[in-house]
Image (cartoon, rainbow, N blue to C red; front, top):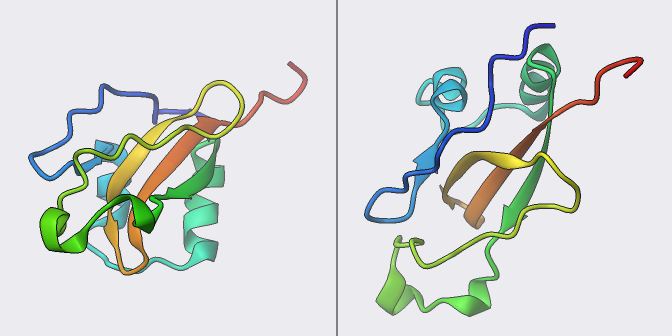
Length: 106
């Protein structure tokens, strides 16, 4: 397995959005990707993932709108997590965290 997706500096745009270039290539502009397809892509790239949603009580839609730049999502427990994407979704603002799977036998 050749892991090519690694942590990159997160440079969020004016609204607080950012997506890892490799993640963006995989999504290819699609709004919806099946969990099965996503999990297969993760496995092929030696990654695991977690999703963190913004607490919607922490913002005012009349003031913030789609701007999530003030949100600083906490990484999941454990080491090695990095941002795959931070964006708005139908379910609110989300951060997709990625991490390399542990090596077999080491």
